[in-house]
Image (cartoon, rainbow, N blue to C red; front, side):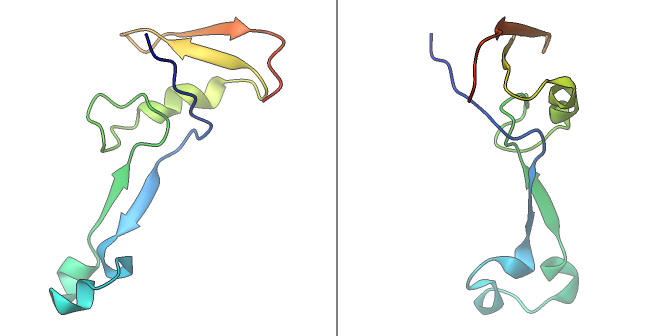
Length: 83
């Protein structure tokens, strides 16, 4: 078993126009406006892409440690954790 700590409860938003060197690949304005989201909470079933599972993590209390089962049900496991 491996425990990975995620401290973010929302995704990373990536816009193609912000990627270094994208201007050498395309100048299509519609393509440059395209964006996608990368999972940062660890709960997505479609990693590395966000599937909005992070909304579950918004209920977490600051300074508490949680684990999630396969159905994304949260269990607080350490009431004394201080980050």
